[in-house]
Structures are given as structure tokens and as C-alpha cells.
Amino acid sequence: MAAIKTIAIVGATGNMGSAIAKSLSKSKNYRLLLMSNEQEKLVDLKTEIEKTAYHQEVFAVSCAKEASWESDIIIIATPYEHEQEVADKIREVATGKIVISISNPLNSSYNDLVTSSDTSAAEELQRLLPTSKVVKTFNTTFAANFKTATIDGKTADAFIAGNNGDAVETVAEIVRTVGFNPIIAGDLTVSRTLERMQLMLIQLAVKSNYNWLAGWKILHN
Ligand SMILES: NC(=O)c1ccc[n+]([C@@H]2O[C@H](COP(=O)([O-])OP(=O)(O)OC[C@H]3O[C@@H](n4cnc5c(N)ncnc54)[C@H](OP(=O)(O)O)[C@@H]3O)[C@@H](O)[C@H]2O)c1
Image 1 (spheres, protein in one colour):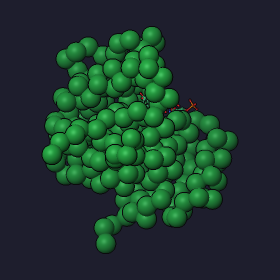
Image 2 (cartoon, protein in one colour; image 1 turned 90 degrees about the vertical axis):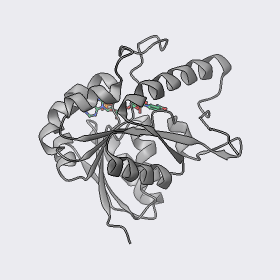
Image 3 (cartoon, helix red, strand yellow; image 1 turned 120 degrees about the horizontal axis):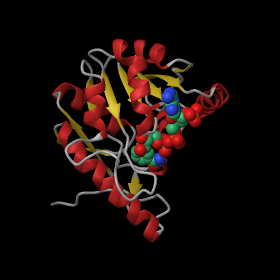
Image 4 (cartoon, helix red, strand yellow; image 1 turned 120 degrees about the vertical axis):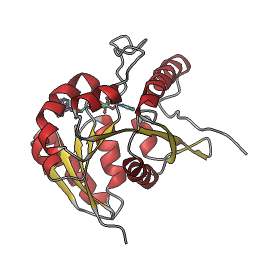
């Protein structure tokens, strides 16, 4: 049996943080440390998870550094503009650890990214956390998809990008656990494409009223 891994979710009470936490809490392979600025919301989330999860190794932590210190893997589920602040808090305790970047660095009009075309949110996070293994995933899956990753009868894909092969495999297992089909897309620079793919899907979702139950699937024989 695989060793249990501890995952810290920073920003756990948000749309994505709570969706990822609820999905992961159904697996016995992970112990979860949920971190948020809002203690009341965090306690409500923990209570909700404890009522429904098969496995209850879920803890509420009020400090990002403490949660990251005690974890093997850190998921940063805050908006892009808060990532520098989080990175500054966790840098010294995130050395050697996998840090998952889920962000889409959208501008306020949702019609472009705030990052330039020669970088990505994931690469900027790697720059802020030079001794961590940053891996991109879950930026192309909407929070609403986590209840069921089946869309139009097919399991939605979740793309993964990263520079460290072992870290990417570990993240692929997390992706599989929450129900998506992992697709290892390439090294961390591929995040530039993944973040722009989701910008396009968000624009299409707004125009075509997809109710956020949209996702990506590569069809092939
Ligand atoms: N929503 C989606 O469907 C979706 C899909 C793919 C990727 N993403 C990405 O996922 C990330 C989160 O999006 P979201 O929609 O979940 O946002 P959200 O609902 O606004 O949640 C953000 C969370 O981050 C917390 N937070 C903000 N600053 C923080 C800090 N400095 N330290 C700790 N926690 C902090 C917030 O807590 P407070 O409220 O207490 O500030 C909140 O719990 C974004 O980067 C987004 O691009 C979102």
C-alpha cells in the first residue's frame, strides 16, 4: 500500500480549494491540512467533510507556513495576485516539496492574462519558490467539475505540466484520485498554453452559457 501523503490546501475555503478538499477527502491515501484566512468558514468546511467523507484525516490550520511545514504537497488555491504573498510565507518550509499551481492569471475583464506570453503563473510561482517542485494542474478544470468529472458521458481530462518526473507522477495520481483523466502535457513552460486554453474556455462559457459544467477532452482512437 502506498504511504499516506499529507496535502496542504492554502485557500481551502474558496471555490477550488473546497472542491479539491472534498474530492480528496474521499481517498484514504491523503491526509488534508486545510488553510484559510477565515476560521469560521474553515470549521464549516471541515464539519461538512467529516459528515460525508469516507476518510476523516482532515485538519484545519490557520497559518499557511504551518500547514506547508507539515505537508508533503502544497496546493495553492488562492487567486494569482495573492501567490507572491503566500510564497513569501511558505518559501523556507516548501523546499523539496511539490507545490501545485492551479491559477489562471486573468485580468479584471477576463479577456486576457496579466502574465506576458513568455511566462505563466506556474513559472512565476517556480521563480518565487526556487527550491520547490512546482507542477501545474487543475487550472483547466472548473470547480463545478469536481462533483463529477464526467461531462457528456466522458471523463474530463486534467492537464499536468512540470519539470520533475517524479513530482508529475505524484500529481497524476492526485488527479486520478479526484476523478479526472490525467494528461501529462510537458514541462512547466507548457503552463503558458494551459493557462491560455482556460482563458478561451472561460470566454466561451460566458458567451455560450455553459453553466461552468464544461471541460476539456482529447478524443482519439
Ligand atoms: N473557480 C474555478 O472554477 C477555477 C478553475 C480553475 C482554476 N481556478 C484558479 O483557482 C484559484 C482560486 O480560484 P477560486 O475561484 O477558488 O477563488 P475564490 O473562491 O476566491 O477562493 C480563493 C481562496 O483563497 C483565499 N485566499 C486569498 N488570499 C489568501 C492568502 N493570502 N492566504 C491564504 N488564503 C488566501 C481566500 O480566502 P479569503 O476569502 O479568506 O480571502 C479563498 O479561500 C485561482 O487562481 C483561479 O484562477 C479557479
